[in-house]
Image 1 (cartoon, rainbow over the protein chains, first blue to last red):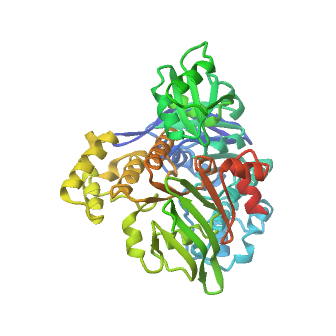
Image 2: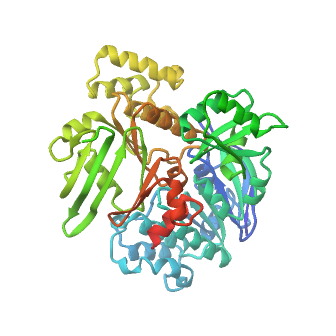
Image 3: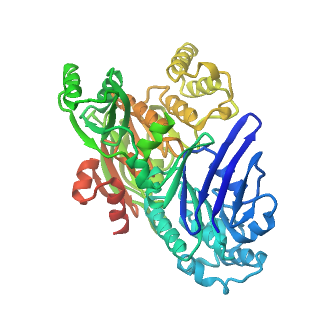
Length: 300
Length: 242
């Protein structure tokens, strides 16, 4: 009851939105599609939810083919699009009732599944959806996507523009839904959310860069990474970029992540170089790669 | 007034009826500083920022921005600051050059100066090949970098960035931060709001608003020490969740 994507391509005029995409999501897996705007995440979601035909390739969702068995898929999946798509001038309860009815069920029948989430917005059930705050809209949209008890749940950037507190709550909700046996495909531009998934696909410009568990992705980073720090960040970045042996130089908050092109790199050489151009207060320490480091290395 | 303080805020308050959206906040921002302004959705960030950029009158309290009073000199503030947000930035149906010319004109630059700025900017951002294309056709990352450069076109003392980097890829995001460092290095003060907590770590100092009040304000390093947290994300969660 998972997802299987095989050699999917899709173009819009001259833009190749997806290029030969293949991956599998196992039953009951929480799988993340991690990439920036324009990577092709939404196009892929629209193909998998039968709203768009692929140009090439095949895909199955919950055992059904996305083209031949589209009616079955529509009954079996829940889809929360990136853009809020509920009826703004229906109330919270009316929206939920509407979605339950078109799927031939009732709020009561599947209340157990949405209870944890819906209970938080139930005090506002008579409020129009258009008048809800961002966090409440998100919870209502998720409730509506779940009300027919789908086998597979598609969430397109559910946490974009949401503050860290609401993001954390949202991921806790996803974990609970996973425990109830639902397969989840979720997309996000936030690299740090990758760690919350069982497995992730890193995607950019319509191509998958890598698929693995978050742990394996950072473990396979090819080079030692160093945190370099100085009180004058701008000077530090400029100097590191001018250093002939640099392999990559990326600002990372209060540090710069530096990798060297030499196999036998000695941090003392770098320190000597920085001192030679009057940067004396630098600290250089080895650090662990993050998902973002890997993403940037692959996208380079 | 000290000339190194580019923003001075004392007891600034905005009421909507009985509700204090911004509740007596006080802080100062230094020249050339990168100041992060964080808070959960609804914490009052946008309301506070609107007062600072001169488009909303405070209910009470004091604030000067670039040396001008927010109550009586709002028009001077607008001339001396830059502003960029992800939602409102450039005109999609004007070309790259037309956008630069338009914003240069709005800020009262001479034709000659606009021409110079426009050429320099296009060269710096490596946009030569797309200078006559509509901005709407450019990738998001290019738009954001152009938008930031345009917000600096009149050499403002401060630039306000409202969630500037949403959705772009990590490499472009870093190029954007390098531009921010460069501007700050040249003496422009940068006031930035963001939902990316890892970005808070790029700032010299960070304030966190909770329910209309500033509950924390310090360097990222000191905030992490103070809240015994490994990341700014953890600091934020501890504060906002109580």
